[in-house]
Every structure is written in C-alpha cells, then in structure tokens.
Image (cartoon, rainbow, N blue to C red; front, side):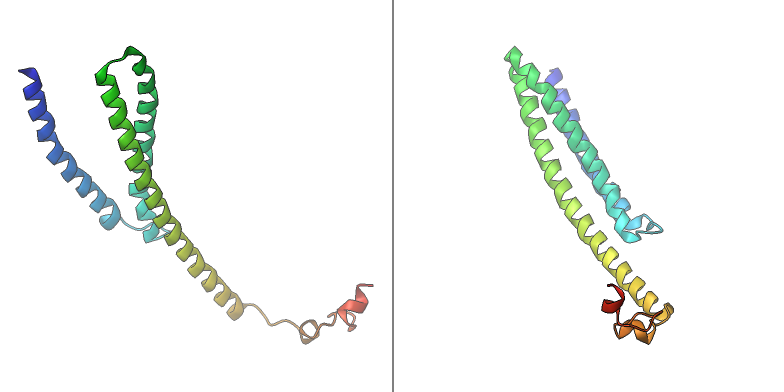
Amino acid sequence: MSTRSESRTSKALVAPGVALLFVGSFWGLVKAPGEVFMGDVQRIMYVHVPTAWNAMLTLTFAFCALFSLLTNAWKCDNRLEAAMEMGVVLSLLLCMQGAILFLWTGLVALRAREAALRLRSEIAPPLPEAVTEGKSATAGTPISEGAR
C-alpha cells in the first residue's frame, strides 16, 4: 500500500518540478538584468552553472553507486543506471550551453576589439612621416642602416 502512495506522490511532484524549472529558466534568461561588462551574455551563466553542479552531483552519485554493485541488489543497479543517464544528459546540456556562451563571448570580444581599434584610430596621433617611410625618426637615416 505504501508503494502506491509513494508513486502518486512522486508523480504529483513532477508537474510542479517541471513548471518551476521552466519558470526559473525563463527568469534567469529573460528577466534577469544584464551584467555591467558582459551585458546580456552573462545571463546564460544563470543556467550554465546550475547545470554544471547538477551534472557533477549526479556523476558523483553514480561513482559512489558503483561500490554498491558488490551487494548484487537490483535497487542499487537501477539507481546507478538512472544516475549515469542523467549525468550524460546534463553533461550534453552543459556542453551545448558552453558552446553558446563561447560564441556569444567571442562575438562580444570581437565587437569590443573593433570598437577599441576604432577609438584608437580616432584618438591616437598619426605617426611621423619618417617612421612611415622606413626611416628612423631621430637620426633621419633608414632603419636598416641604423640597426647595423
């Protein structure tokens, strides 16, 4: 009788758990404010870091469950199998989120570099003509002769 009530309880908790997962993901990815330096890119960290923690915990549980195989109990074997499957799924999600983060961060870094180069060309004084023509600015001689 108790297994039937436990089954109903676990099934009843699945729907609120999934709903909270979607609400938390939406909140972290859409509603959270952007970070000062990284901007909107940092929002993926609100999903990426918990995924990493959960993957680490499930794979650690699976490693610890390996030792319970010595008891030859089906319950331990089922737990090990479930932990390994969840660990693989979470690791796959982690890799996909890491790729998204890498692409976004790369694009942000590329845009920042282009903006810095544009700003440098606007602010920096032009080089003296002697340096641009291949001559030393101080001696007035070609650079190749001054290096000897």
